[in-house]
Image 1 (cartoon, rainbow, N blue to C red):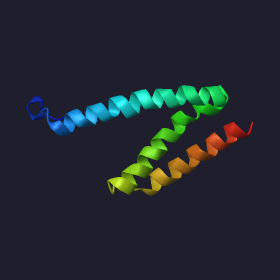
Image 2 (cartoon, rainbow, N blue to C red):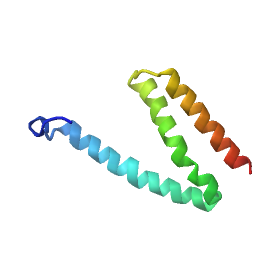
Image 3 (cartoon, rainbow, N blue to C red):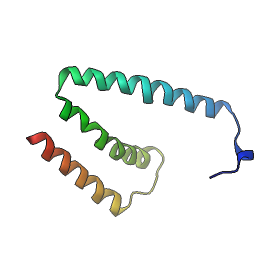
Image 4 (cartoon, helix red, strand yellow):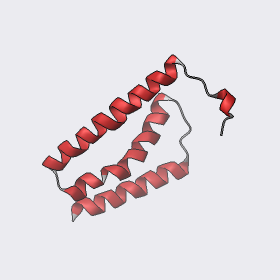
Length: 88
């Protein structure tokens, strides 16, 4: 963890919090409930497994983060599991 003295409120930190509040929470929950009207609860619940994979993907694309073989293999295993659940 960073020391408490390193904590600063900046326009960038306020913007990040607003972005997470609006898109990460409001839009996310709205989309989740909208999908529940269109699909089964089992199918919609699989979104929680896809979210970390999307975070890895966007981190790689936008922030040029490292993409390890373990992350790729783990993502493929998760996708395989989601496909198995949705086929039934």
